[in-house]
Length: 381
Image (cartoon, rainbow, N blue to C red; front, top):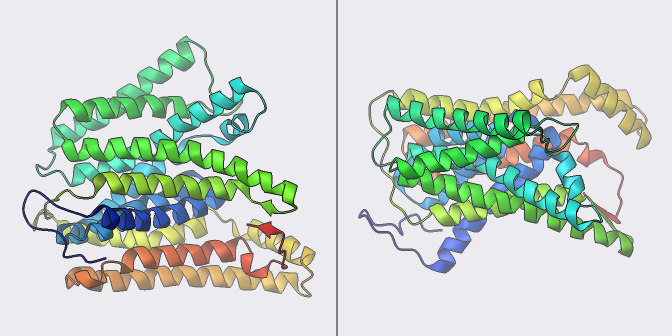
């Protein structure tokens, strides 16, 4: 990908083949992130694909301004998409695998609403940061207020007043998220925020289709059981969700010029925090926030014993050491990114997203004991 394809004017041109290629890079990065997210779940798990979306998009844009914005938009996208980790959606996938048309349709419709609510906030935040006219404090208060008020009103009307529960006995948080997503789109459309609206819209459509179409592909994966092969349908769904969402988002956001970040207003410090959080603290948060040491050692020991290891306790401790080492690798990446960013080495702009992807892939493979599995050629996981 040639990063010099862009002019400095208001109009940008890009061949369709080039746009698709760049969008596929983003799709691959977010698909990997969403697949790994499924192993950890909740807020911290969703932060990784959120950061990957912004970093990969900034890289493929080819713009110097996006290279400079990358640490900031990675952090805000991680937070925006990470909030979706509060929603419960496992039972909705059950509906979408049912044998009745009503349940089947209900499952896919609600999965679209939930996927869209998952992707639209991070997508909007990326766009709002990149607005040519920066948002002032009152703008941010109005934007956040629309989200909270829209979510609260929707929850009050649908859940409290009408008594509708989306996936009992699990929580109804996704109803509030769906209302907040619509309120966000309305606010952006009525307050002349073109980049923010574009980001919110393509995040909404992309990840809505990603979640629902990913479930359809997961259902198709189950059909391979008739051929004597087992494919992890949940992995298929997760990866497809991120892949489709990342592709649609990037394809919709590419081709527009984005302004340089301000030289003042503490941007160097904000960029430092973004780099530290994304490459260093995210892997570490997975380690300390989603893996209780004593419980994981016991689980690994049990699994390794079943795999036939002579010293399962010792091997489990080795797994823990490897995970800690991966966290150290994340902080090494922080140092490299700081050098690349401070010296404005745009030719190395792919380094952050590749480093994060490789770090988290290695972390997840070790955490899930993929390197220790006995060979099974009839199972794809």
